[in-house]
Image: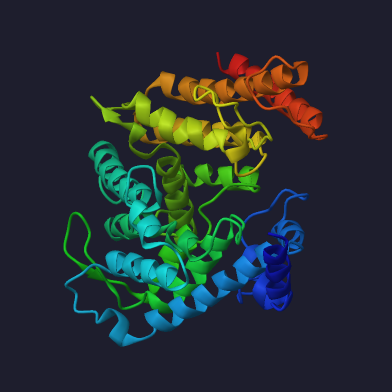
Length: 405
């Protein structure tokens, strides 16, 4: 075991930690355009921390190699042989899977990503959800008023591919903006001229203008650590904005993608009202998504009814506050500006879903500290500080809920 650790450290030390590795060859500017990050959670801070870990250095080196391999394959006409018989979204996913396997990923693991709740099943769900949602919205407001008919088709491609490049590196190799940056740069280079077959309508071939729209949307579709500036995009949904403006179209598209990326198939129109139509899907997607934003060193003692908080990706309870605000603005503008009937229980369900996760986290910490919980004991010195953050977030959210009543 010791020899294995020494060998891994030696192999990692041989990988030069430079800007090419740090920014995956795309440069620092690729990470900082468009939105403002929280000052203590910038990409540089996170990358500098994890590139001190030899294991992460090694894995990021593999990710960089995978990006180079994908770049070459997408630039080789023999790789795809674009005949128009297969939509490029499927060709892209197939190629990325091949790159992942060639770099050591288990074929069984790659195949599992098509199962419910996994990466490619999620993208299919978001694509289907986007198609259905735009059809239902246009039945109320008319076609071409929020986005043009062409942009709605481009959105379907964006939805079906938005997280694809997460597969190019292990979770140990990447931070959250990486897959966006890779998408923006790689798709920006190779997407023009490719064919896409939408669910409805005739096949299209992507133009340079199409590529700019798609990469602008997907290239900045995550709000984590930049939630406040991201949420303000909802204001572009107001009718006073020019639908023909590229800036307006991109902001509107990001806002809609954000909604369906969070809710999946849980939110739909029913009898003309936008509402939660699948409570189980709401729990599985939205509530569980927020739970993964609260990473705590709390592992259960075999009690499957408890949350394994150690599986959380980040500790960012305030994501819930900003997420609620952004979604509230979005639903309010759809209702007030476009006459889209929104179930008042939708906002309340979102708020209570967030509040429930926060209170469960508070209870888990306090019971662990009191020695009365079913979680394994932990000596994490930061647990009390995290409890304070959670309690403050609960107070702020409860105040917001009271204001809304």
